[in-house]
Length: 259
Length: 310
Image (cartoon, rainbow over all chains, first blue to last red; front, side):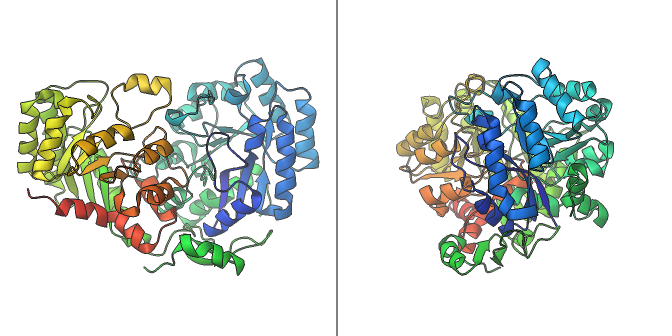
């Protein structure tokens, strides 16, 4: 069993993605032995009204039942966002909310960001923070989003002590610093940009945050899935219960989904 | 291991409810059924993937391991990872980075680090001789010193664009000694990144050098090392003598496929540039026939090395 916590649906404006629809993503998942995927809408990142992207995501994924775990995108600058978030959670059953402050023009630690994070925490949802979609060295002229910064993450973690964080596509995380910000037990980190061997990022994070802090993530369909399958294979020396936690159990428990 | 040609058979097999994936033939799951072959060990990887022969055309030894009290831990971690991944050869260099022009003494010191690693792991680590072309005749002497000590090629970083005449004697020596020239590359579209590397060469610069020296075994380094890789690949279409290595921290889908479609698999060299799991994983994920994959993993580089006279 594998649950991939780092996946997206839709078009990306700056590069053609081969697997854009729910059906195409299912094919990709099946070819790679991935049972379920935590997905957010790329359209929601770029639409003025992000909630239309949430609606598309719900409509497109519902036919595939539990294979997809959709995530609501929130833009606290847009009118009615709280009611939209309620609809995504209460009516459509979304299990987490994601913020893309660099794309929507605010900061996680400004007034808007604090309000959004506070509301997500009140609802008992994890917030999904993707450090970046693409490497900035190849950015399109219109792609002005900067990577999310670790120092900002540490600050907001301290400010929102009950909030749970799903951290996708991050590099440069220091387990000690995360623990110091009170994140042990309330963060789940995908290993799409981490090393299992060589730099041993994953074992260092496990040493400080526990095996419950790591999850399988591939950043599909931006990235090939093979790298994350190789990393999972390189963790096979772990006790089987720990390997299962990383492969799927941590994701299921963190997001409160039945398996 | 035999594997069907995924690229050609995919559409045909889809019609029959089958999909050719990285792990071979699998029945396509519909709706909520889920994959039939999922395993916690990575169900999409080909059987026996670790045992597939692999030569890494672009890697590094960055620590000064020639010193008596050297810290070998990162080199050891690299070796451990390579062996676990079935990489039989690591072609390493130690370029001087950070915008430094680098005098000949610093260059020699850097190359001595690689030579020390080659001595400790003679069956695994091969060396590229890092050269700063501005060192003139001393740079050429350093190439000879490195080759005499067993290195297999030359590595250039970003001190000069490869269209600069300072690079030409280095290229000529590589042609004369029939050794590969691996060049740091990037088409950087981000202003800050470009400002940090104003003399970096993109694929069109590689093409210019290749046209000037058609016999040169020129390798465009880390096509996924940052920068617009689609631009880089398209820029090489009319330059048949330039190889690309697949390394870099960017693991984006279809990069390997595009290299093969646009350049032909014979020009594509597997490499990791320290992104070891990602580097192996993206080749395993790419739409390649077993023969193409084998060529990329090791045979193409072996062909280059076989051309050497030194």
